[in-house]
Amino acid sequence: MTDQAEGLRRLLGRDFVRIVTLTSSREGVGKTTAALNLAAALANAGKSVMILDENPGRGNLAGMLRRDAQGDILDVARLGRPLEEVMLKGVDGVAILQASRGVQALAELDETEQQRLIDCMGNIAKPVDVVLVDTAAGSPGHLLSLSLDSQEIAVVLSAEGSAVTDAYALIKMMNLQYGKRHFRILVNKVKSEEEGRAVFESMSAVARRFLAVTLDYMGYVPDDEALRRAFNLGRIAVEAFPLSRAGSNFRQIADSVIRWPCSQQMDLGDFLNRLIQGSRLSAARA
Image (cartoon, rainbow, N blue to C red):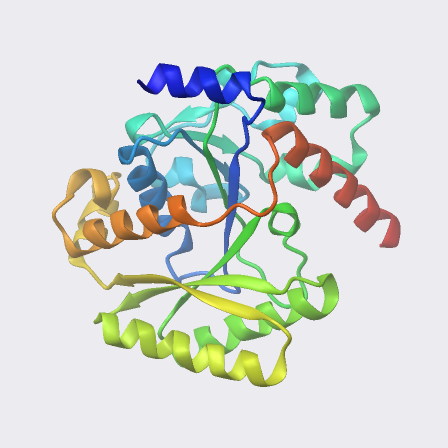
């Protein structure tokens, strides 16, 4: 049945991918852990998932999983390495593509390198249903390059007062400078559903008053010991402790993501093309 559905989708020319960026204004709010667990939950729901990892150094996804990256997106563009060769296989077949060097160098690629990258992403062997973009933690003065070209922007924050303030400042910057008007809010590291909802409602009220934006509640993740145990094991809570509160919540969030309406349809090649052009424009302005 799955093969028939995939064949029909290809026949009708509807190989569209859902692209969701997870971003935050600061480190320590659990954004990368959320990206890994959400990817695993989506994979468990039958979706083919790729994570584009913009985090440099030890804080990237490969480091969290205690794996060695085999290459990155820049190796595909400049060296012609096959995409499947440089991607890291995560839990349940989730593909992880390191993108920190590539994103910084996109504006410098020549036409051949650009086209090679677009072709590789657009003609990936296994169709991808969802791309999660895990951006490097930013601040109001930092352009989060990958987030500006995705269909959905999810801001991850914790319940700490300063984290909420910083997240609001990030939303304000992206609204005023780049015209982004819709954001999803994922509240992490809270004690209860009531606390998560209260944090969202507080931020939403301020945003409605002072900004022309819409905030939607994506959900909450409890401050669960299972997340820390999984991290110490170099694993993911959804996979290692599926019956935990965190595991259950990530599955609920994944179900919600699958049902989101898709107002802007594109494939991976379209996404990369827009990202390259946007990077060139940003470099020209700078």
